[in-house]
Length: 297
Image (cartoon, rainbow, N blue to C red):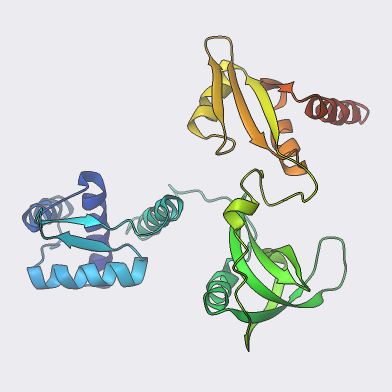
């Protein structure tokens, strides 16, 4: 059996279990037999091959399938936080689509973006898990030359298609964009884990990666027109989002977060489909930006 057929079979097994939640081996065999007839390929398997497939799927894709002896069926084990599990399965869907035999260039169009530093992810996570110091050259958008940094890596976060490293640098927690790193090295030097660092708590009331140290979270109330409101309901702005009003005239929501530059830029991207109701500081900041933009014309 070719590698392409094996990859296709893995894809079918995962999607079958995802769609049905729990399946028996007999159901998987029936499903693969039907798919074999539809696709004109032999995708049928023995119990021994299926066991090997389960191990390979966990090793290659990080998607772990386990057998429930009491129910006598198979399910995908959700052992990580929901957000990571969802992204892992999403990544597998994309990978599987790009592995299709048909030519993709006529049917799949991918955003033309520069690399965002994802080549550093594995090394950084390895260093974080083992509490090893790392060094790298880092060039900000304000400096012409890169500076050598040696830090204690703590956590990694994604925001708007970019990845960021949170690290302890000279006793302070700082944030570095992976796309501005080069010459990453994992040093053979162990550091004591910072037990007090919790990125989830640190960014609990943040929109993005900016975490003010001298401010308190603010209750924000926003009003969206009904059309834009549908998008806001399907993809909330923040985990604290609560619906206050939802009718044919508006979607009004409340949020609790810091009034950061990232959040201000997000609101500006909605144009005249959003209106800030409170706090007054946010209203004043939005007015100032709009007035400054008008002066450009």
